[in-house]
View 1 (cartoon, rainbow, N blue to C red):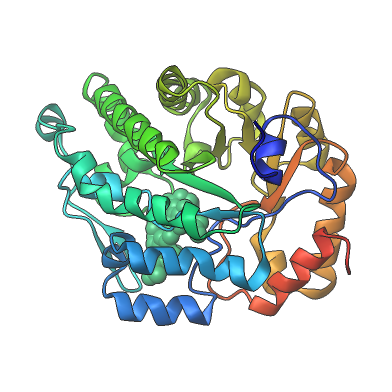
View 2 (cartoon, protein in one colour):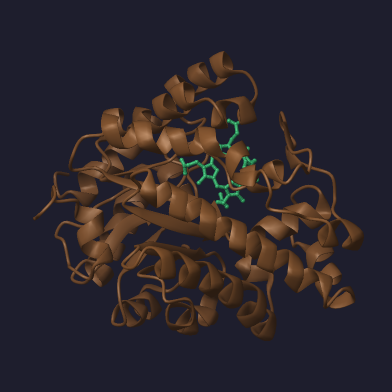
Length: 343
Ligand code: CP3
């Protein structure tokens, strides 16, 4: 029995697809006028995440416009702290905020009720698989425990995650416990997404780059490997992309350490090093999102360099981080055409 051919699934299973399939991190978002319209209609950002009708609509918008090879579930990594009753809110112009957690509250955290709270997100995944074109890969996702913990400890985003780093040194028992709880909940959440129709899932460790060598192993590799182990024990063959932004040289051990099918690369990863990493398996990335804002020659040269260095192996073309609100939607069309060889 063979299902429909989905290019990103093929790459995750080790095949080289030429030209490489493409999707973009944050492909549903404020750079699209139709997103801003649905967002205004839905209410708050979290209302949008928990409304299957609106979340399905914004997930499909970039697929209709650009025909990307994957759709990524519209939600946020912070729905897990929200489900853990951390009073998460998205303040216009200030980014996410929540109640900072302390040691006593970590001891009291319970996964009870979390999956019920996240049921609307799982319903969004189910509807998406029904509405997407057959050939479009559907990606689910969650945040990596370290990255989610940085927001839970500080109560907001910071530029260097100093509060979480300090907390980890001062509370060497409580901190790993927080990561373990987040890993176990994340595994259950990803399994539910796969069961609802996701073809693969991505784990976002956006703040892996602030960790020292030993801490990277303990707080980035360890918890992500715990999630992947649990997901694969329950769903053998589950396809997983692990994105550790800023990990640099640590990426050498990241694939083996986590057992991810593919690793995501940010734009600071040199293409020669990326080609080395690709010898061990599929890679995803890594165009600088600012090249999409700039457009023109900067965009074309960036795309061509990646295709030249990584295009002959298993590659999922993507940005090195999320697309930004100031990107011109016309530049995204140029990007897709260039990758597909039509420009
Ligand atoms: O990629 C996609 O299109 C799927 C949806 C998605 C969002 N956030 C939507 C979103 C995904 C996969 C995320 C992941 C996410 N969320 C990460 C990891 C990836 C990364 O970008 O580093 C992180 C760290 C978050 C936490 C978060 N959510 C922050 C820091 C912010 C505020 C910054 C901002 O851009 O405003 C958000 C809000 C958010 N998540 C928006 C979107 C489209 C913008 C909110 C709005 O519409 O007002």
